[in-house]
Length: 346
Image (cartoon, rainbow, N blue to C red):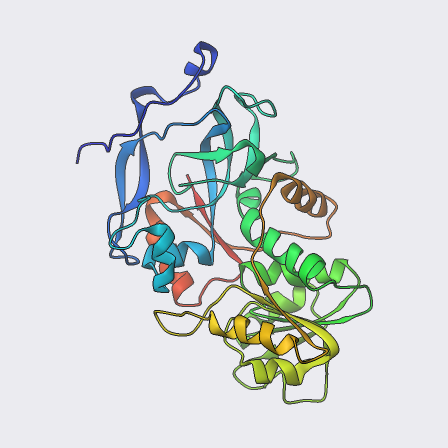
């Protein structure tokens, strides 16, 4: 198959030596919606960069639930962004860690050769593009694999607890989906903030969640977290399927439930009605229900890097996969088999 055409990379003569020869790269691409049957290894042209962007030689890329939504185009409202009939951007991947290969004319914070991590575009490939403001220098203590597991999931957990949940030391926090990409960070960050953590996950992953700092672990297949008498000051709902009624029963008077994402539901609505319903309930109750979406940026990546270097937080990596096995990794994510984060090695 002939390489797909993209505009040429903008670069200075000094940067030209760092850009890839031949202007082609290997990438996992999709030209239709789906999972393992729609994803394939292909040779495509290296993407161009704008004046405020950085071209990254990808060393590792994190796999998050957002990649599943973009790959499947579900729920259908996702396609308003990703393309109605076919994907607008055939290369998935947002979490990225690698080396700067070229910089745009307006970039001032990075130079060719810098090791960076952050939020990019099309990171399941040998080269990816990121805005300067969405990148941070990679701490020397972190491997590329560890750094690639941080940006999306780590930022989501940090902001859900700190900003949306207003978590304080000494509070009781419940985290559903505690063994996933966001959940494993949430358990550790909440513990580092001085909270007492209860994690909800499968029995097979209870050891992971307990090892990350959860005082109590609930097996969702055997126990309803809302059935007992325990009440929580903050609930971080990552699993995406508990009813609002159950969340209200488990939430303390004056407590806050942060609904992360919109999993569950049907192909048209996904889980969107649940957080909207929760916000309406908040108008008539002391309990707060917050619909939450993370805001990725370099400062948050730097903060997370500091937490990891200090030993308070550690990326929980299930397995690493070579680029060509990315479809296998997303298949395991779809099946609920990933513990923490899966990382693609390029």
